Amino acid sequence: MWTAPIWLGIIGFYYFYALHFEDPYEEVITGPLWAPEQVELALTYFYVFAYAITLGLAVWEGGRLRRDGVWQLAPGRSRYRVAADMLLPVVAAGWLILVLPVVMRLIETRLVPTPAALMPLVMAMGIVCAYAVLGCAIGHLTPRVISAPLSAVAVFYVIVETVKYDDPVWPRHVSGQPDTSLGFGEEYGAATLFIPFLFVAALAAAVAVWWIRTATGARWAIRGTAAAAAVAAMVTCTNIASGWAIADGPVTSGHAAARCTGQAPRVCMAETGGAVEELGHVRGQIVRSVTRLREAGVKVQMPETVSDSLLNGRDRKRSTRTAWWLPLSRQAGPQGGGTAFIRDAVLRTSVTFPCAFPASFEEAPSADYVVNRDAAMLWAATLIDADKPYLAWRKGEYGGAFHNPRQVLAKVQGRVEMALKLSADRQTGWFHKEQAKACELVSRKADS
Image (cartoon, rainbow, N blue to C red):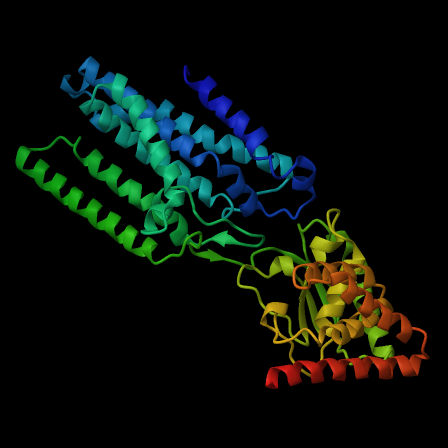
């Protein structure tokens, strides 16, 4: 209880300041909201404090047992029962440092957690128990006045410093503070959470075996076996974690619920993406955009499915002619650009050229093709009222690639303004000529 002001102050400061420093309250509650991601974010600052404070308090209590000579008293209760009773408030303090931020975040976001969402919390609570056992042992062996604060500071420093490790990488993954962040629709793989727990729990179990009361010969055999098993378990953990990349522990994706409507295209948006109530309107924008382009003579195909890119996961699936992945929730939500940006995404996904262009201006042997290509695309964007977001995007691209971005942009706009004065049939012909000219220029420069 006497330490409660310290760790309650830590919770208050890091939750209300640090956790909301980059994401204000208004942005947090508007989504996209995914319970495992929110639990992971809520715990980010508190893993290390829970472990350090638990260890320091356990050392203090273990030293108290040593001072009072409890181990030398007649064995009315087992040593494990005595240690459990003494460590219970220590573990409770460590658990509260973890549980309170999670509960506060779930209340703030109005999310109901799934069992998978709470697995990082369960892992950390298990590690807190392991640190309590280790601290009790340290308190029996060292002066608690010195070792309690030193051990807490040492654990805090070691865990915080693991984020800087890149060779070897395993300390990042076994520290008990997951190095891998979660995205929307993702959950931690079992190994990501079990490996750090096993690493610390194996050591704590080996230490706890030293408290067993048996005959001297059997006692040392049990202790030796426990120590060997702990070393084997810890080495196995480090070997497995060494195979993971930085910030890339095993995760699984595609767990977020979706709501769908319509057929050909069947449009699906994330249930908690923050804009699912706009699903019908979003589908209407997609259908009207594709229909308008086809009526104007642009060779586009109505997709069979259009899925929210929030549902895509970190291993991004690429859009195909029949299955599109578009940022539906991100653009249709309160913080997005609106349906004009959805139409722009439809444009860039559906309108294709009879040739391939370089992935970036830097990879292109020449930028001669840019004016014709972008003029064709801007004309198509104008048809579906997506010219403003398309121009804003290309303006940013030009600024980083050309010495004269304004002149390039003015030339593109000038060609489109001239084309829009033509009759509908001639505009279609102009569009196809611009496509052909762009392909001719890019292939000519590539060959040369």
